[in-house]
Length: 121
Image (cartoon, rainbow, N blue to C red):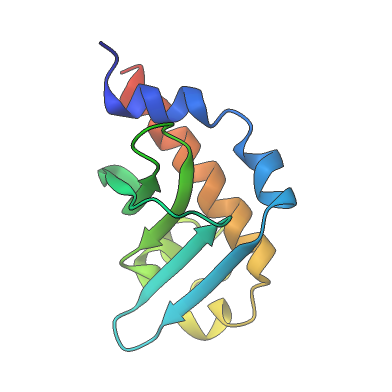
């Protein structure tokens, strides 16, 4: 039996294409420094998988392993770690200037990379 990271990774090889076609919602909860990204319309209660090295929680459909969203519980820290991908933005004030698409693409890319590392380590 494959591990969960590998199942999620394999089921989402097309996610960078899928996020450009499906409805994606982004919400930032400033008081808690949490970013929520929801992908597509899903009626099933997702399960979660944490990519510890990247501080990203991946939400996925437990039947298909398709990613349905992400949670970043430490956005300020995430911006510091991934400043180069985010065009050098390091502060939360800069984050508010980032286009949603740029943030979605960066989080998605880092998630897939993290899942790959977990799956094939």
